[in-house]
Amino acid sequence: MSTSPTATVTRRPGSVSALVRELPRVDTPLTVLLVALVAGQVAGVALLPLAIGRLVTALTAGGGPTASRQAWSGLTLLALALVLDIALDPIRAMVTAKLSTAVDGSLAQRTVEGALRPGGIDHLDDPDVADQLEQARGVEIGGHSPGQAVDALAALVPLRLTGLASAVLLGWAGQWWMPVVLGAGWIVAGRWQEKEMARAVVANTARTVQLRHAVYLRDITATAPSAKEVRLFGLHQWLVERFTREWWDGIVEMRRRTTDGRRHLAASALLLAAHVIVVVPLAYGASSGDPSIGHLTIALQSLLGLYALGFTGDLQRRLRLASAAVPPALAVSALGTPALAVTGRAATRLPQREIRFERVRFGYPGDRRPVVDNLDLVIPAGSSLAIVGDNGAGKSTITKLLAGLYRPDAGRIRVDGRDLHEYDLASWRRQLAVVFQDFGRYPFSVRDNIAFGAIETAATRDAVVEAARLGGFLGVELGLADGWDTLLTSAHLGGTELSGGQWQRLALSRALYSVRQGARVLVLDEPTAHLDIEAEYELYTRFLEITAGITTILVSHRFATVRLAERIAVLRDGRVSEYGSHDELLAADGRYAQMFRVQSAPFTDSAGGRRA
Ligand SMILES: Nc1ncnc2c1ncn2[C@@H]1O[C@H](COP(=O)(O)OP(=O)(O)OP(=O)(O)O)[C@@H](O)[C@H]1O
Image (tube, rainbow, N blue to C red; front, side):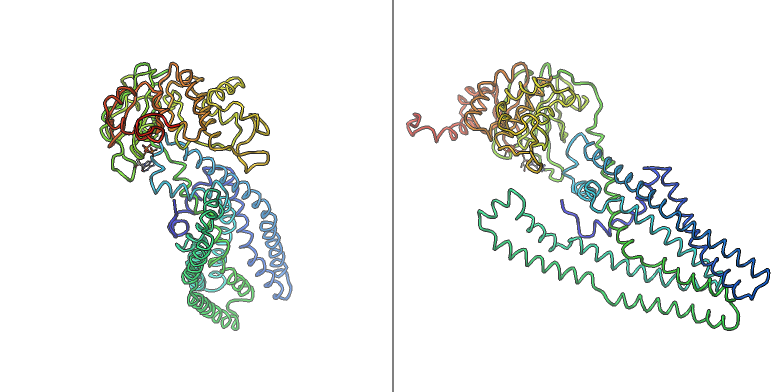
C-alpha cells in the first residue's frame, strides 16, 4: 500500500509529542535521569555568560577587594559551568543511547504484536491500516527509527533551552524588549526554513508520484518473478525509456517543490534587521556607560546564543524524519479486533456432529458486493466435502470464513449447533489444519516448516517424519544439505529454495502434522495444483489414510481430486447450486456434469472412448 507524498512527514504534526509521551512509558527512570542531565547542562551553558561577565567586570575594576570577589565568583561560576556542560555530556550521551535503544525495541516489539493481534485479517484490507503498517515498518527495519529521534530530541531540547536562557540573560543585561525582537526574528526565520526543509524531505524521500513510479519500475527489474519475465518479454528498452522519463519528470517536480530562494533571502534580511535593532542601541548605550562593560559582555554573549531558538538544520530534519513512524507504530501496536478476538468456550475435539453454514453472506471490506450470498451448506463431521466452482466463485473465501479470518456480514457458521464466534478462536483454530491456496513458505528449517502445524506441541522426529510421509515430502530432505535442518531460503548461506511442488508437499505435511497432533478439520485449497502426476497419484492413494476420522474440505478444479470426496458442492453466484456425490451430480446432468465433461474432453475421442 502506498504512502501519500505528505503522509510521512507533514501530516503527522503529533509525531514529536507522541514520542515525548512514549519516553516515560518505555523507561521512566531513564527518562527522569535524562531530563535532569539536560537541565544540568542547560544550567551550565546559561552560567557561562554570567561567569565571563563577572570576570570582565573584575578585570576592568582596577583591583581592590570588590574586584577580587567578582573575579573569584566569576571563576567559581566558570568552573561550575564547565563542569556541568562538559562532565554531564558523556553521561547524557550514554543515557540517550540507552533510552533510544529501549524506545526502538519497545516500539518494534509492540508493532509486531499489534500487527499479529487481530484474530481476523479484515483489517489488512483497510487502506488506512495498510498505510499505518507501511509507515510503521520504519520502526521494525530501523530506517529512520524513533530511537534516532530520541537522539535528536536529546540534543535539540538543551539547545532550545539554552536559547531561552540566553533570551532571559539578554533581557536582564540589556533591555527587556531585545530578546523579544531577536527571538521573534529567529523563530519566524526558523519556521520558514523548517517549512522549506519539510518540502525537501518529502521530495527527497522519492515521494513525488513520478519518482515513486520510477522506483517501482527500477525495482521490477530486480525482483525475481518479474526479472524473469522482463527478460523474456524483451521489455528492457521500454523499461529504460519509461524509467528515465519518470525519473527526470520526478526530479524536475522535486526541484520545483524544494527551491524557493526568496524565503532564504527574506529570512536573512529579517535576521539582519533584528540584530541591527538590538545591537545599535546596545552599542550606543555602552558608549555612555549603560549597560556597564560586564552587562555588555553578558548581553553580547547571550545575543549570540539566541540562534538556538531558530532553525537547527540537520537536528530538526532528523527529528522530523525519525519521529514520523511513532504515531503509525502506536496505532499498529494498538490494533485489535474485539469482534474476532472472542474468548469463548473451548472448541476441543469439535466438530462431533457437523459444520453448518446458514444463510451466510459476506463481502470483502471496501468492496461490499457479496462474494458469498445466502449460502447454506452442511458438512457432517468425519465426512469429506469437495467444493467446486468457477474462478472467483468464492471457494477460498469459504475456507477463510471457516477459519474465522473474516466474519460473515449476515447469517452464521455453526459448529455442533453453536455459532463459530461463540468459541474461543484460538481453540477453534487448533481444530483446523489448512493448506491455503497461497500457503506460507517460511524461511526456516524443513523441520520448523512442518512443526508450525502444531507449534504448541514439542516436535518429535518421528512425528515430523510421519507427517512428511503422508504429505509426500519424505525423501526430499535427503537431497538437502542439512536434511531436516536445511534452511529454506537461498538468502542464507547453506540455505536452499524448494520447487513449487516441493513447497506444496511441505505445506501438506504441515497440515497433516497438525491433524496428527489433534486437528479435526482438514481444509485443502487446491492441494494438487503444483504436484507432479506421481505425487498427485500417491496423495490419492493415501487419501483415506489421511482423512480417516476427520472432517475434510477440499477445494479443487481437478476432478480426479474432487471425486475422492464423499460429497461435492457446486458454488455459483455465491451459493450452493448443486450438492451430492460424484455419481449423483453426473446423473443430475447440471453444471457439475458440464464441468466434468469439459475437463474430460481432451482425453476422450468424439465417440467417447479414451485417446491413445
Ligand atoms: N482480500 C480480498 N479483497 C477483496 N476481494 C477479494 C479478496 N480475496 C478475494 N476477493 C474476491 O472475492 C471473490 C472470490 O474469491 P475467491 O478467492 O474466494 O474465489 P475462488 O472461488 O477460490 O477462485 P479461484 O478458483 O480462482 O481460486 C473474487 O471475486 C475475488 O476477487
